[in-house]
Length: 276
Length: 351
Ligand SMILES: Nc1ncnc2c1ncn2[C@@H]1O[C@H](COP(=O)(O)OP(=O)(O)OP(=O)(O)O)[C@@H](O)[C@H]1O
Ligand SMILES: [Mg+2]
Image (cartoon, rainbow over all chains, first blue to last red; front, top):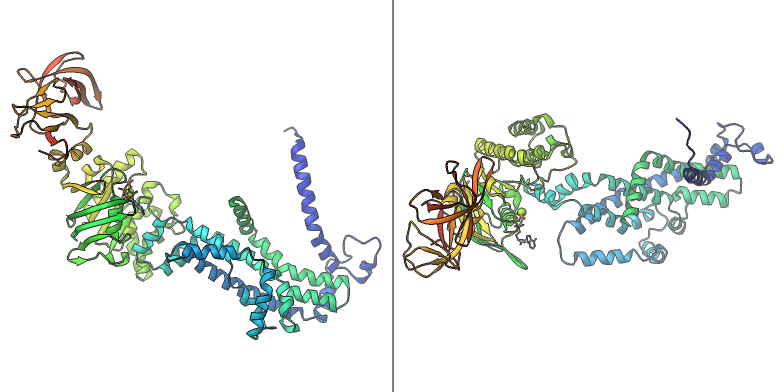
């Protein structure tokens, strides 16, 4: 077969590859630096690869300087709790707003959608006063409670539920299923791809959540990874290679999650994009 | 189980979908609900299933008033027009679902489901998902799912409308067979008169939410009580001629271009009527009393048909092959007794 040079394709791929490199570079640099020795760091010009790919000294040192293990566990607790509770409330909300009939349903739903216009930053103050009054400042609960429902995810899931034909519902009712049974046995399994997307996006958001944490957490033992990393940078001096090691294991879980669940995230985003 | 409905009515904001129905569905029989699109068949079925609340009137299953009973308590099986199979479950799981809800233990329900699958001939597809089945197979799965809880009443909403002509005929025989094997009281919705005629024990013909006539298929064809009934059944359709009854008690076309002698006088005069003549209801021969011109002869399948003209009216009739009349000939014909009906023009009622 003769090689056919397609100029258009060439440029498309050229820019795509360029874009990918630009996106990957910071991650690459982070990982490389986290593996460098003090000598590597001072080398001039900077080296592109560490002298030893298996030099984990920086990780060990970072762990010794700050309780990253605790931060990690906190992050996991907060993220998993948020995701489980949010998914649960989202499913129930979406079901109510799509399948159940009650007075003022659509009005309430419109009002809720209207609330999405209010930026999080504006809610921060009221939220802060609320949790302060509840005496929850500086506990893990305060990182979970305000994030146990999501109008946006409810909206996405409600739309998906609405696309499931009524006849399935009636058929299930005639077969003897209650609303509850119908929801968990029929609707949720059908909506699994949508739910996966929602869960994953939510997990990433929770994991990376920083601003609110900064505001309501002081005590070292209640810090999550992003905050811990921030504190480490401000308190622990500016040893780049230690910071890079800490940054690496902060983002690593999400990268792994993304690699495993890529299909669902990309599908979800693509679908969301198409729907506008 | 016998189903009795009493002044059953369903009103929607701008239509009355079912208007004051009073009738009975016979126990253990297959009844067809027949009528043109939008006449309220699905509404009727959904009320029987309990999906739609009735506006007025009562529904009785045997002697129980079930009008306000929720669907899950009625013991009905419903097959939707689009089958409504659960897309994420396999055929086996779909069929099992009603028993799963009833908390029947797993081994037992699987055994029962396999039995059902065999009955409707889908036992070789148990592990497939609904979308991997053809329309006819999906339909049979839906029927199996409706039958597995041994319903007192099986409701089928135009289950054959998505199938091609061959499969339709096959499937309607299948439904007939299953119904006769299980002896479950069955109501079958269709807008296809041929389908209704071929499989049902009796037909309920409705129009615009109104019950027109309930009868055995042949009786409905032979003895319609309304011009709508006569016109809805039969292919080729009945010929409707408009005219009046003259002084001799015979039928005269509206423009007086011809008179047709009636075998049976009704003892009325001067009334505006519709004369319905089924295509097979004429005989040709000498010394008959009505003259007709042959406009066209043709065959439809193995049937010999002709378009003929009596006065100004055109009719489509069967003509036996024995008659070698051809286009342009004028023939003598007479009406038979069977298949000729006189209806009042204003009300459409049979005279
Ligand atoms: N939910 C509803 N709200 C308002 N009107 C309705 C509703 N459902 C049905 N109708 C009306 O009631 C009438 C009967 O509808 P139905 O679905 O029972 O007809 P059908 O005989 O089943 O027709 P088809 O053969 O097309 O399925 C129609 O005029 C329809 O527009
Ligand atoms: Mg219908």
